[in-house]
Image (cartoon, rainbow, N blue to C red; front, side, top):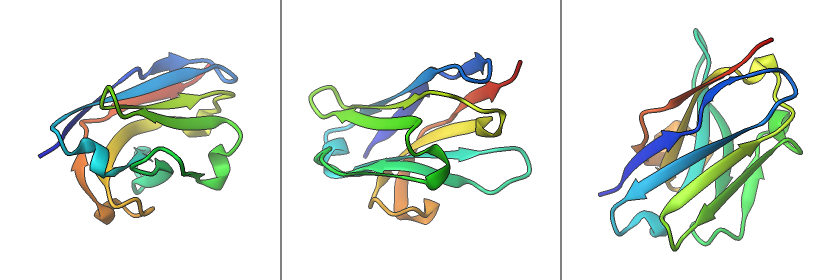
Length: 121
């Protein structure tokens, strides 16, 4: 069993940066790919980025390419999402998830509680 917890959200001005962290408990975390999803009010949950179990492969949705970076530290059972050049449309609750590595929420068995990111002047 894996339990996930996100931190690092907050209010930031457009063009600013935030670093989201995902801390995991459970000894099987490193067997799973880790993804970040986000959900804005009234919208479906959207895949943002994914990193393989080994940390060697990453993918991003087009709207965040070049601005966001996903990483993981297998020795610490953590994952991060570094977000630069933030835009108002990035405003959402951000979730980390552990699972198969797909871009669909159904491919993930374990989810954190989410952390709010608000980009506004």
